[in-house]
Image (cartoon, rainbow, N blue to C red; front, side, top):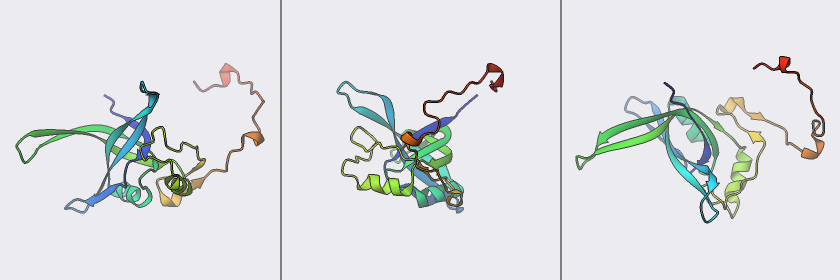
Length: 169
């Protein structure tokens, strides 16, 4: 059986970090994930997916991610239920995140949030410029890539001949 989820989306608000009675960190957050198509009026819609992450990863997420941050998440779907105060059974389906990755630099995130056309949901009015600086989920493992300039691409216009025998699959 397989239960794997991979999401890329923007945080709809700052992660909510809490601690259990035993001191275990848990953060809840919601990702706005764009759909691959537009609706009848030509606008792109988004799904809002509830997620939870535990322990050190929860603390790291709460420290480094803010509303609007572009985030990659891997995990699994989990359904739980409980009885509310009115005695009704309530079912909750959420993504339990095993890992996350910040997919844009802090500077890009701050610039986007200052942009007047950012609407927070990653929908049509948002600023979708691609940023080539990434931050790892671990603050000590920061990795920045150089800016990509299409005019100075050393591989543009060249072809590479690879035989089928050289392919690993």
